[in-house]
Length: 242
Length: 93
Image (cartoon, rainbow over all chains, first blue to last red; front, side, top):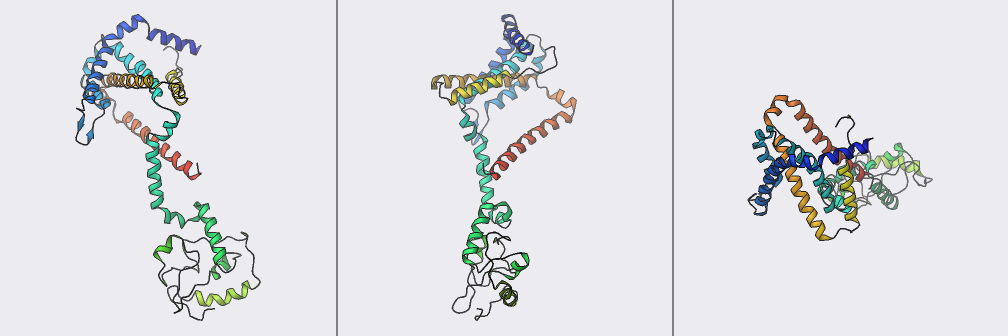
């Protein structure tokens, strides 16, 4: 069976005779490892800001001594060290780790932090694609419903209905209700809000049937308001808008 | 090894078992420090052996194919991990 075959393999590997045959090669490898280890503890591997890991040093020394590996005295030891000792070392490596550290340390937090940084940079991009951000979508919908002027039943009427612009006393247009989107910081100046089809980019408009009540005068107001708001995006609306 | 089937990686089970013991806090710190030292020394020894078995001449003789395979594997693993992280974060995990 397989398990017994593995046991036989292990027994063969650790048999005294095989260990004796493997001794010279293992000793040579251990000597190389010791050189690298001591060099590392004496910080001989630090060159300014650059730190060469002892692993790299052993690899280089080993590759420099590669012609020796053809010698029959060393060969079993190299096999033993390269396979069995590596496995034992990896198994023992588990003793320094906990499952929590597997998640907390290592490359994981670096990657997560990197991802977070990228996500912050790309947030306006993500906001303009609200399908990817359900939480924002809900929030914006709520804000819109609180501050807006009615509900939109479908895409055609969504074009006609956008929130009434808030007007300053002197007729300048103030930022829209719920303007906490990515554009609000850049576009709070009057007349700077870009309007496309009566919609403010970056804002999420409710979809059809999303808990909206239809107002009785929807259709009538929609047609007359279109003349005001689709005239020119950057232009100030008339002071007597309402 | 006579039969072609690969042996189960016993050392991985040992790794997981030791990590589990360490997670439960059973391993005393002194043992932990000793195991850390021994394991790093063993791994460095093994790397020395691997370096001695690595012949740049032989590597050049077999051509760029296997080297490219190794590079592709490394890139694949990196992309897999990054993709998993992104995917799990997108799912809110």
